Amino acid sequence: MTSSLKSLRETADLRHLRQIIVGLDEGVILIDPDQSLLWANDAALAMHGVAALEELGATVDEYRARFQLRYRNNHRLEADDYPIDRVVAGDSFSEVVVEVTLAGESDPRWVHQVRSLVLNDADDASPACLVLIIQDVSARYEAEDRFEQSFNANPAPAVICLLSDLRFVKVNQGFLDMTGHQRDQVLCKTVYDIDVLREGERRDLAKERLAEGRTIPQMEAELDLPDGGTKLVIVAGQPIDMGDQPCMLFTFADLEPRRKAEGALRHSEERFTRTFQMAPVPMAIGSRDGHLLCEVNASFTKLTGYSPTEIMGRPLGDVELWASDQMRREIEAAIDGGHDLRSHEARIHAKDGARIDCLVSTEAIRLGDEACVLWAFQDITQRKATEIELVEAIEAVMKDTSWFSRSIMDKLARLRAPQAQADGPGLDDLTARERDVLALICRGYDDKTIARTLDVAGNTVRNHVARIYAKIGVNRRIAAVAWARARGFDGEGVAVGKLEQDAMA
Image 1 (tube, helix red, strand yellow):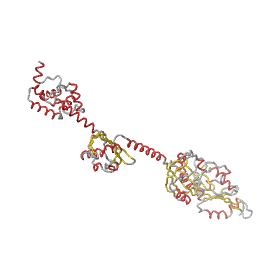
Image 2 (cartoon, one colour):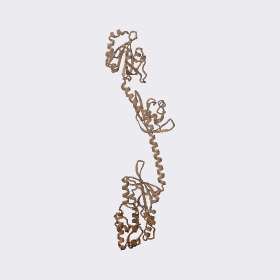
Image 3 (cartoon, one colour):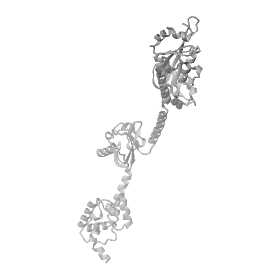
Image 4 (cartoon, helix red, strand yellow):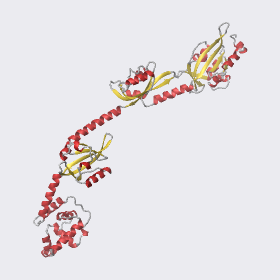
């Protein structure tokens, strides 16, 4: 074999080389020392998107004009740095990775990993043939690029460390945002410099798995922050390969918002509990389903005589708190229907059997994950007794009210039936005689006076009064007065009966 171009082309050596390398998966380009391209196998042509050697270029210069090369860091190769130029210059190199772009295009089409080989002349050791051996690693680097983009774009905080020395080699923006670290501060540290397993629930297991390059299960841990604080997180580790380097991918979930929310909820529940226990109003908390009491305050115990241990955890029907089963069913049905009670009048039984009149109010609340009902009881037993006594006194007085002034009569009527409304039956539903009787009742006349005024028998008056009560839905004289007053009828100015007609005449 000689060192001249012509002699190399004319010998059988080139044919033998071609026969050896034609079926290789790696691309091979043979270059003569005079910088002319002698031959390329099909793999090398396909890696450049061409079908014939002429499309690669007849010489190194033509190759350089047709294909632009740059490193993976986007730095464009100068002419002398092209692998094809370096092999011509006699440089020996391996695993040079370059991106290959067609002339006139801006985006690279392939990623090549290139190494060189020099075939020397056996006689004088001068180069007889220069060889470029190419591997198309586009798929691998595209996958790495996709992983890099996904890793950086993933909002979930993550870091990657080499298993060989546990140094961080990648960190995404999510981790930087969560911790406040700077990228350069993380990439020069190890797993234990920025301790991602600090206070881990199963730290020893995690360290063992990390040393073995095995999956680290999820666990809670606390990360140290640059400002001296800590952050509660869930951390997990997954072994991965980056290139030929075994690594560990750590991912995190920020639990700090949950910890703050739980703290706020705990403080809120503590405040609620203190307020509940100190409230002067008898109160209880029960489950929404089953109507069991799970908490009572001191005022409730004082009102009913039931200690917490005697009443908590038991259905109110078993305790017989309500005065009647019908009342209990009505209240429980309202709650089951999703309704809150507001000042609902009810009667309960104390432990000693005493009857207590109450205004009951309820409110649906949640304690933790449980749906509950807050009960409030207002004791109106004394007020009810006072009202009954007052009504009885009013009715006793109104048996003879001829000496009362009209203003006092009105006030007494409103006091007895303050809720009278101008609806339901009207004055038109009464006969003329019934309106006369009602007018005299409003003036405070008793039955005897009405009978004399209308010149009728006492039984007739009583019959009229009964029919009036039935029509307007009352059963007492004072209630009839209140009903009439609510409709603007006070009986004044109505001339009824023989006595009044004579008086007017």
